[in-house]
Length: 171
Image (cartoon, rainbow, N blue to C red; front, side, top):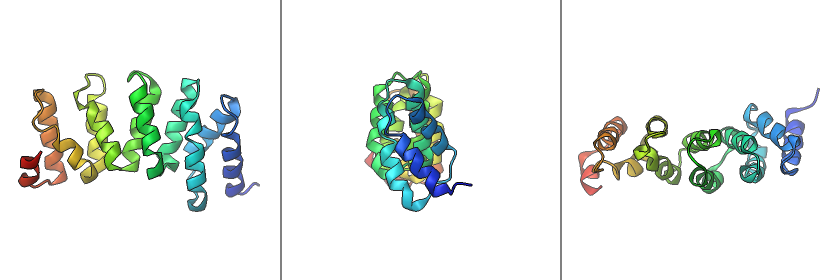
């Protein structure tokens, strides 16, 4: 039986074969594999390549793997994927889910932009709720939205974070 560390090393090597079945398979494997701390930074960096694949399925698989293996260093690449794709593609939701899992303020800002999106509003609300207080600043910017639905959802999220009213006054 092969050691998990060797399997991760092979997956990282396979990620260097752009737009191949190896690359996609490696992403799928990493998405289902518990991260190994010493290998996480290298695997997370290697997963950024497939985010730019010509194949949508590979971009989705890479984003799903980053939900598990991602680090703060991947936030910018995931935001780029989120912002560059039409929101109806499956890799859009996978990128949003990865940003939610990373619980980063910049990621929260990117997710919060979709509070006013008719198609992904509920994905954004679910994600911002899961991010918890790290999303507080991003959500506070929407409590005075001209869109009543967005304003109400932002207020509910803020209350859920336990935000003090003086923070809302500053928003």
